[in-house]
Image 1 (cartoon, helix red, strand yellow):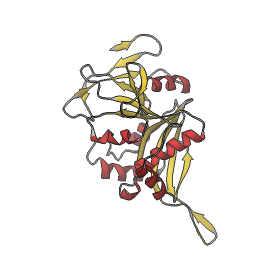
Image 2 (cartoon, rainbow, N blue to C red):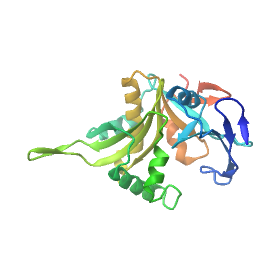
Image 3 (cartoon, rainbow, N blue to C red):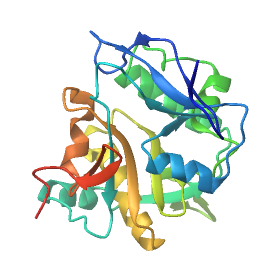
Image 4 (cartoon, one colour):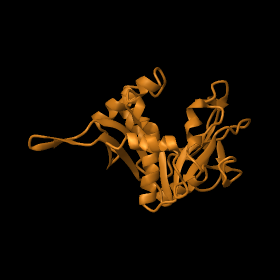
Length: 250
């Protein structure tokens, strides 16, 4: 059914099981997949709390639940905690290289290792390369695959690439970066690579002179989302307005 008239059209999905609160059902409102978006129109949707999965630009729209709260970080105001500073120092040997959003067998192998370690048996744990790249890449927006590697070593006359530790899939918007999805080696627990990837994206947004890092949805009742509250000050979109979460105000 059509949820909103106008251009572009928005549609409402059928109810389906919620991925984060298993006892609940979920519906999403999504942009007409047949309607092309440019970077600015996509950025407008992100500013209104939308996310993307592949080509699908969507936002939760549940009649009896408002648990999914869009959040973003004002990168110029961010100050790392002591633990986050330790994570940054612990990964001093990591080099990040921005790659185009193309299929890589090395990336895919790491993605499968990550899903098997973190989400075994889920719909994400799928050996299909087409579904993998279709989930992460969009033909309509500027996306970067940011490789996290240990620094290259030199053997005899040539340099060897370091070990691939993770990939942070990031959309580039006029006002910020959007953290789409990050996967990494789940065996490298002491590195806290998920935290490091966000810290790097914050630093990269600052370097580019951008204002925000969009972090998707925070769900207070979901342990999977708890880490987002550790990046402060965190802004939440409620009733059409971005405001600093209570407890994060100076």
